[in-house]
Length: 198
Image (cartoon, rainbow, N blue to C red; front, side, top):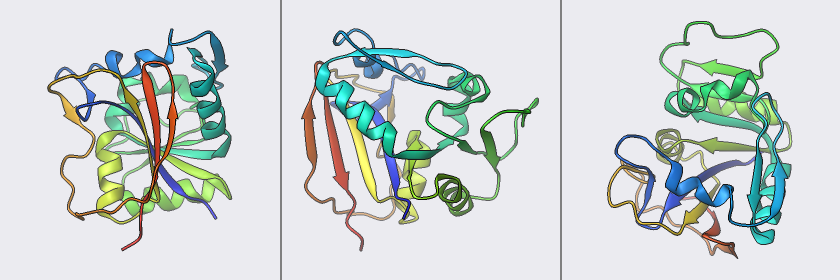
């Protein structure tokens, strides 16, 4: 059965981006925290250079994924991943489909009828694999709807002080998490929390 799993890098003080939307500081660990190369697929293929523990974490995480769910801001910031998300078909939650989309031979799809529909479509595409959820607002919507089953946070060794928080605007609190799996990388700590069902 497909699980719905949040995946985000975050500063130690809880921010996923600075006040201008920049994410460099929370993603620095992806490039230069080690000498192990991890390659992504998709049309915007990238190579990460991370420590061995981070590489093992990334390989394990991405092998579990069958689809991605994300918000429009993440889609725009990523340039639409060149039309093909590296970690499976991507479902973008949005109010309006952007001009020029959908595109032929693209694995990027748009959902305009709400978070439950987006999760259902992503789960169907993922089959037995997990759905990764990216983007603070989309993760918050999944938490508020009781649809999230795990939270993966890559806790970057930086304090931003201000910006966009990962866990703002929660309505289903307190949300209890089970004990985490913890992997110490270089410049990052990988935390994986199961979300306890109410």
